[in-house]
Length: 272
Length: 272
Image 1 (spheres, rainbow over the protein chains, first blue to last red):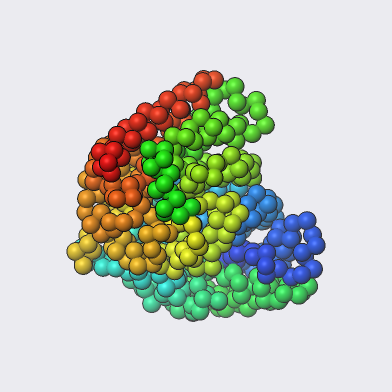
Image 2 (image 1 turned 120 degrees about the horizontal axis):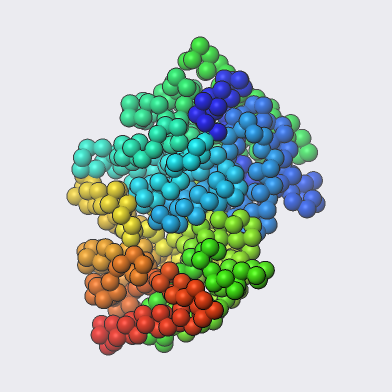
């Protein structure tokens, strides 16, 4: 999916919501457990109940890998349920030497058919570039993550005066264009967004941490929105597990609609 | 596998060789391609031909994930072929927020039964700790990697005078003991090992980059070996693809023996 197509979806749906499919077998409604593939069945109903309210889905690879082959079968099925007008994100946080990153790109882009994959920057440019240069496919590079551990290294000051995450933004912005590169910036660090937008005004940001992790959507929009919206805000647990009963999909829709309504107002406010 | 058990294997086999199972379907000997699972068949023969010469095997997850479900089936089979006296490394370079890292730990330690997993440090302590605290299971944390891109961020000087990789070593050495934490240090950067050993004298190091990437085994031993050897030196392509003919396993054994003989001499030289 191209940047323009993504922005068109955002305008059409009045939403920049990404739903994280962190589907945890131990949290599924009991009535699904008797099915052959409860995870795929759950994801299918979540997607059917929410796809008009969000612009992206983000399966978290760990939750599928935890069950080995069976989990990856659930992921393959889930990818088939995703409508074409939704942007798909493999939340995988990969990154390795060049020939290995090429294999990961083959896995996520070619085998599973994702539009994008999250990548960790620690190993530098040659670990990221194998994911770039494919029309309509994206790298979403970790910059400033939503967890406490972000303060261990990401916010360390370098000798050149920048923080590590600023240096990651500065260098990586030269590796690919804003048509193929996004960044992860946690909603729990919304106050950093103002300075981040000075470094990368045009790039899309994937923003986790709203909801269960406590970040504020209004602050994210205030400091992070650009002329193409430039934001995908993720919510996972608050939507997926809104109810543990048979009405889980309906309640997930209500939660997603709640967020979408706030997003619609914020889009009106900042983009008119 | 505990640290003592690993060192016992090293002494017994006179080897600190780790064989990287970066098994690439496109590089397999042609006669295997007619089998149902050529990757598993190849790995099985490689393991049978080399397990007395090496102390560890390191499947590179990307090469299995590239084929989706079928690839993960090959990995499950490969894990069954590994003898109990060989240390197993999931070369996966994972790292995510706490609940996600816990799911990755479940995948690699519980589902696949690996002894260890490689982890990227960018997201900090709470992304690494969920992998720690399991007797006989290990985190192998990226410190200074073997690729060119290591110079983009890892060797950047911080305001506190340390490089980023030194800061990673310094902080993370407090997250877990040398009984559960190893580090990746590339053989292509052997000259850095002297200073690294001052920071972490006791930890095992996983050293990629000998062979196809050009690092020197003698230098690695000279600067990196400690009283428990403290080294696992990886070779992948030079062993796996020593021959593309029907004699591939035999040639792989010759290559592995070549390295093991040099390792035996180095162990005699430094540990006497």
